[in-house]
Image (cartoon, rainbow, N blue to C red; front, side, top):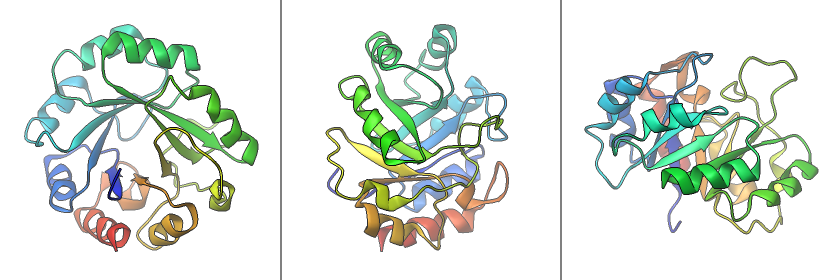
Length: 213
Protein backbone atom coordinates (compact mmCIF):
# COMPACT_ATOMS: atom_id res chain seq x y z
CA UNK A 1 0.00 0.00 0.00
CA UNK A 2 1.68 3.17 -1.16
CA UNK A 3 -0.27 5.56 1.05
CA UNK A 4 -1.72 4.96 4.48
CA UNK A 5 -4.91 2.91 4.29
CA UNK A 6 -7.70 3.84 6.73
CA UNK A 7 -10.62 1.56 7.57
CA UNK A 8 -13.69 2.84 9.39
CA UNK A 9 -15.39 -0.26 10.78
CA UNK A 10 -18.88 -0.97 12.06
CA UNK A 11 -20.69 1.48 9.78
CA UNK A 12 -24.47 1.20 9.86
CA UNK A 13 -26.03 4.42 8.50
CA UNK A 14 -25.89 6.31 5.17
CA UNK A 15 -24.68 9.42 7.04
CA UNK A 16 -21.61 7.74 8.52
CA UNK A 17 -20.81 5.91 5.28
CA UNK A 18 -20.91 9.29 3.54
CA UNK A 19 -18.66 10.82 6.20
CA UNK A 20 -16.09 8.05 5.82
CA UNK A 21 -16.04 8.57 2.04
CA UNK A 22 -15.67 12.36 2.39
CA UNK A 23 -12.84 11.83 4.88
CA UNK A 24 -10.95 9.73 2.29
CA UNK A 25 -11.19 6.44 4.15
CA UNK A 26 -9.89 3.70 1.85
CA UNK A 27 -11.86 0.86 3.47
CA UNK A 28 -15.38 0.71 4.90
CA UNK A 29 -16.23 -2.10 7.35
CA UNK A 30 -19.66 -3.61 7.94
CA UNK A 31 -20.27 -6.03 10.82
CA UNK A 32 -22.46 -9.07 10.21
CA UNK A 33 -22.48 -10.73 13.65
CA UNK A 34 -25.75 -10.69 15.62
CA UNK A 35 -24.09 -10.39 19.03
CA UNK A 36 -22.45 -7.09 18.04
CA UNK A 37 -24.10 -3.68 18.62
CA UNK A 38 -22.82 -2.85 15.12
CA UNK A 39 -24.55 -5.81 13.41
CA UNK A 40 -26.38 -5.17 10.16
CA UNK A 41 -28.33 -7.60 8.00
CA UNK A 42 -27.26 -8.59 4.49
CA UNK A 43 -29.87 -6.38 2.80
CA UNK A 44 -28.77 -3.37 4.89
CA UNK A 45 -25.18 -4.05 3.87
CA UNK A 46 -26.10 -4.08 0.20
CA UNK A 47 -28.04 -0.81 0.55
CA UNK A 48 -25.19 0.93 2.39
CA UNK A 49 -22.54 -0.16 -0.10
CA UNK A 50 -24.59 0.71 -3.20
CA UNK A 51 -23.37 4.36 -3.44
CA UNK A 52 -19.74 3.54 -2.58
CA UNK A 53 -17.38 4.00 -5.56
CA UNK A 54 -15.40 1.00 -6.71
CA UNK A 55 -12.01 2.35 -5.55
CA UNK A 56 -13.14 2.22 -1.90
CA UNK A 57 -12.92 -1.27 -0.39
CA UNK A 58 -16.02 -2.72 1.24
CA UNK A 59 -15.25 -5.24 3.97
CA UNK A 60 -17.67 -7.56 5.77
CA UNK A 61 -16.60 -8.39 9.33
CA UNK A 62 -17.61 -11.91 10.38
CA UNK A 63 -17.04 -14.36 13.23
CA UNK A 64 -16.68 -18.03 12.26
CA UNK A 65 -19.15 -17.65 9.36
CA UNK A 66 -20.81 -20.65 7.77
CA UNK A 67 -20.74 -21.15 4.02
CA UNK A 68 -24.47 -20.34 4.04
CA UNK A 69 -23.84 -16.90 5.55
CA UNK A 70 -20.95 -16.25 3.17
CA UNK A 71 -23.03 -17.27 0.16
CA UNK A 72 -25.76 -14.79 1.11
CA UNK A 73 -23.32 -11.93 1.65
CA UNK A 74 -21.36 -12.55 -1.55
CA UNK A 75 -24.38 -13.08 -3.82
CA UNK A 76 -23.86 -9.57 -5.25
CA UNK A 77 -20.76 -7.45 -5.80
CA UNK A 78 -21.38 -5.42 -2.62
CA UNK A 79 -18.12 -6.61 -1.04
CA UNK A 80 -14.44 -6.59 -1.93
CA UNK A 81 -13.14 -8.39 1.19
CA UNK A 82 -14.13 -10.68 4.05
CA UNK A 83 -12.61 -10.04 7.51
CA UNK A 84 -12.63 -13.09 9.77
CA UNK A 85 -12.65 -12.37 13.50
CA UNK A 86 -13.27 -15.79 15.02
CA UNK A 87 -11.25 -18.95 15.55
CA UNK A 88 -10.88 -19.70 11.84
CA UNK A 89 -7.86 -21.93 11.15
CA UNK A 90 -5.43 -21.25 8.28
CA UNK A 91 -7.08 -24.14 6.44
CA UNK A 92 -10.56 -22.61 6.82
CA UNK A 93 -9.27 -19.19 5.73
CA UNK A 94 -7.74 -20.72 2.59
CA UNK A 95 -10.99 -22.54 1.77
CA UNK A 96 -13.07 -19.36 2.15
CA UNK A 97 -10.64 -17.44 -0.04
CA UNK A 98 -10.76 -20.08 -2.77
CA UNK A 99 -14.50 -20.74 -2.57
CA UNK A 100 -15.76 -17.15 -2.53
CA UNK A 101 -13.14 -15.39 -4.64
CA UNK A 102 -12.72 -12.33 -2.43
CA UNK A 103 -9.75 -10.94 -0.53
CA UNK A 104 -9.73 -12.50 2.95
CA UNK A 105 -8.43 -10.77 6.07
CA UNK A 106 -7.69 -12.60 9.32
CA UNK A 107 -7.83 -10.76 12.63
CA UNK A 108 -5.01 -11.83 14.96
CA UNK A 109 -5.66 -11.22 18.68
CA UNK A 110 -2.44 -9.99 20.30
CA UNK A 111 -1.29 -9.89 23.90
CA UNK A 112 2.34 -11.05 23.60
CA UNK A 113 5.03 -11.32 20.91
CA UNK A 114 4.20 -15.02 20.61
CA UNK A 115 0.76 -14.11 19.26
CA UNK A 116 2.39 -12.12 16.47
CA UNK A 117 4.84 -14.93 15.70
CA UNK A 118 1.97 -17.44 15.55
CA UNK A 119 0.27 -15.35 12.86
CA UNK A 120 2.86 -16.64 10.37
CA UNK A 121 0.69 -19.77 10.06
CA UNK A 122 -1.76 -17.67 8.01
CA UNK A 123 0.82 -16.59 5.41
CA UNK A 124 -0.39 -17.91 2.08
CA UNK A 125 -3.95 -18.36 3.37
CA UNK A 126 -4.97 -14.79 4.25
CA UNK A 127 -4.48 -11.75 2.01
CA UNK A 128 -4.06 -9.46 5.03
CA UNK A 129 -3.44 -9.90 8.77
CA UNK A 130 -5.12 -7.46 11.14
CA UNK A 131 -3.36 -7.28 14.51
CA UNK A 132 -5.98 -6.52 17.17
CA UNK A 133 -6.03 -6.49 20.96
CA UNK A 134 -6.88 -9.81 22.58
CA UNK A 135 -10.17 -9.55 24.45
CA UNK A 136 -10.58 -11.04 27.95
CA UNK A 137 -11.64 -14.68 28.22
CA UNK A 138 -15.41 -14.93 28.17
CA UNK A 139 -15.91 -11.56 26.48
CA UNK A 140 -19.07 -11.37 24.36
CA UNK A 141 -17.24 -9.86 21.40
CA UNK A 142 -13.87 -10.74 19.81
CA UNK A 143 -13.14 -7.08 18.97
CA UNK A 144 -14.55 -3.57 18.84
CA UNK A 145 -14.13 -3.08 22.59
CA UNK A 146 -11.63 -0.23 22.50
CA UNK A 147 -8.78 -2.32 23.90
CA UNK A 148 -5.20 -1.85 22.72
CA UNK A 149 -2.08 -3.99 22.97
CA UNK A 150 1.57 -3.00 23.37
CA UNK A 151 2.36 -1.57 19.94
CA UNK A 152 6.10 -1.90 20.47
CA UNK A 153 5.62 -5.67 20.04
CA UNK A 154 5.38 -5.03 16.29
CA UNK A 155 8.71 -3.19 16.09
CA UNK A 156 11.19 -4.94 13.83
CA UNK A 157 8.97 -7.96 13.25
CA UNK A 158 9.30 -9.28 9.68
CA UNK A 159 5.73 -9.62 8.43
CA UNK A 160 5.64 -11.28 5.03
CA UNK A 161 2.03 -10.45 4.13
CA UNK A 162 0.10 -7.16 4.04
CA UNK A 163 -1.08 -6.19 7.51
CA UNK A 164 -2.95 -3.61 9.52
CA UNK A 165 -3.35 -2.37 13.08
CA UNK A 166 -6.57 -2.37 15.09
CA UNK A 167 -7.67 -2.21 18.69
CA UNK A 168 -8.01 0.88 20.85
CA UNK A 169 -7.16 3.37 18.12
CA UNK A 170 -8.64 6.84 18.40
CA UNK A 171 -8.21 10.43 17.32
CA UNK A 172 -5.67 11.15 20.07
CA UNK A 173 -3.37 8.15 19.57
CA UNK A 174 -3.52 7.02 15.94
CA UNK A 175 -0.54 9.16 14.88
CA UNK A 176 1.56 7.67 17.71
CA UNK A 177 0.44 4.15 16.77
CA UNK A 178 1.53 4.65 13.17
CA UNK A 179 4.87 6.11 14.28
CA UNK A 180 5.61 3.20 16.62
CA UNK A 181 4.48 0.35 14.37
CA UNK A 182 4.85 1.69 10.82
CA UNK A 183 1.38 0.25 10.15
CA UNK A 184 0.37 0.56 6.48
CA UNK A 185 -3.33 0.27 7.46
CA UNK A 186 -5.21 1.45 10.56
CA UNK A 187 -8.67 0.21 11.50
CA UNK A 188 -10.99 2.04 13.92
CA UNK A 189 -14.44 1.24 15.28
CA UNK A 190 -15.25 2.24 18.87
CA UNK A 191 -12.73 5.10 18.65
CA UNK A 192 -15.10 7.06 16.39
CA UNK A 193 -18.31 6.38 18.32
CA UNK A 194 -20.45 8.35 20.76
CA UNK A 195 -21.84 5.06 22.16
CA UNK A 196 -21.45 1.39 21.19
CA UNK A 197 -22.62 1.09 17.60
CA UNK A 198 -23.36 4.83 17.24
CA UNK A 199 -20.74 6.34 14.93
CA UNK A 200 -19.98 10.08 15.00
CA UNK A 201 -19.60 11.94 11.70
CA UNK A 202 -17.30 14.48 13.38
CA UNK A 203 -15.10 11.78 14.97
CA UNK A 204 -14.78 9.92 11.66
CA UNK A 205 -13.55 13.10 9.97
CA UNK A 206 -11.18 13.91 12.86
CA UNK A 207 -9.74 10.38 12.95
CA UNK A 208 -8.98 10.36 9.23
CA UNK A 209 -7.34 13.78 9.50
CA UNK A 210 -5.23 12.65 12.48
CA UNK A 211 -4.14 9.45 10.74
CA UNK A 212 -3.28 11.17 7.46
CA UNK A 213 -1.23 13.90 9.12
